[in-house]
Length: 255
Image 1: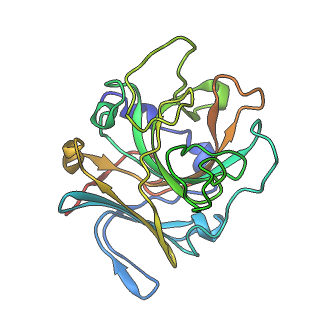
Image 2: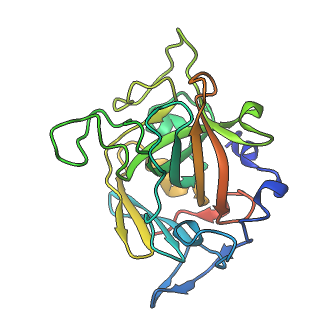
């Protein structure tokens, strides 16, 4: 994929939170995580985001996105600020080599990643009522899933990434479950499952059959809504850990 090299983040940004990994198996929580990327635990990373294993595999007609950490996955979420501008998003992210067109975006529009996020100050899943209270717009603090398209933007910091903005008046190709934000983001409603140290999401392959030939990585990170709520709207501002250590997307999708 032509845009993959743009994922590279400066080593100086990652050194505090990333250790190189290689395909293999990692024993954790009494079980062996096979395939994918095994990563050594790091005392420099908060345990809920300290990646020790990342894998994407095809299981029948679904892709299973899996990540294990050294602590309890999902245990930490951003504090509520009461406003959109400057609010935070915590995330578990699987960057892939899959073309964004495979899930409904413009071809070659950036790096397609699957993400599980939580953010108490806004809701970006307007088609779904995750907390079941009848209000579609008040459950952003619950963990939920997205497809996002990423590109580097110096306005987010040196060598940092953003979720791609949609300029005013532009009409790019978008998935049917696009949430209406001026971003290349999809809110497909696939529910994450947290069990102890792991988070998993089962994603119907649908048209994205090319995923079986893709490669991937794993990232935990914080994003922030721009304080002026203008482009770039949503920046990656704090990389907690990268499974490969260098965002090289080395792991093949398994079976």
